[in-house]
Length: 142
Image (cartoon, rainbow, N blue to C red; front, side, top):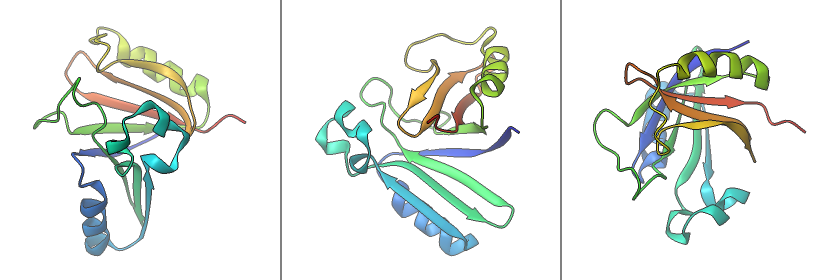
């Protein structure tokens, strides 16, 4: 079953911000640094200390975040530091919604990434025809 949560993008202070939010909401905070994943080889060493995935869960509150990794191709600015995070289990379930949202979407290589496997599971992103940013994540297929 699909569900949506907010997804925030920070510029190097994700751990600080999410730790602050944990003091506000309580709950369990998970922080994963880029340097602790196999994806680190795809990025310069100076980004290895950045957070690739953060999640705060406290009762009905559940949101995720990351540090900005797209620089210098795409820089953070007000309006592009928030996405809707669509989380599901199966590729087919995610693909159906992804394809519908992709109709009329900007296929710019910086903001459109077709669904594909990553070390942490299925991943894709797009900005729809209304300018809304969507990030998709599915379970890792073993």
